[in-house]
Length: 89
Image (cartoon, rainbow, N blue to C red; front, side, top):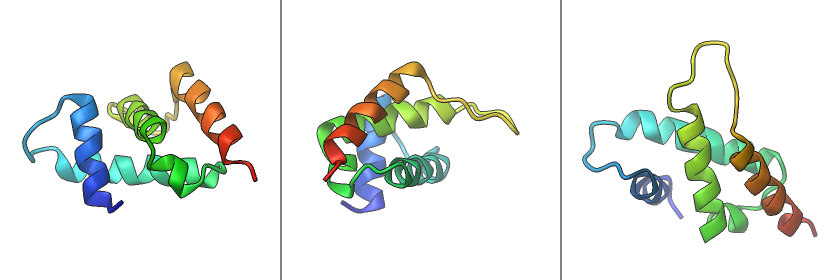
């Protein structure tokens, strides 16, 4: 799945239409995707339905992030735990 396709799925999940926020959303989606993969989630699991939902929650969590602040929601953490478990060899 390309980053552009991923962006469209995140926008759908967030209920966002149009292209005004695409550059900001794209940066955040790529950052959350890399975070997920660095945590051990396989690309296959990032791109499945639960992965896209998790990524969307993560993007929503960091949408209004303030400088120096990093905080994902409990929902994101729970979903990440599930994805990491199914990504184990």
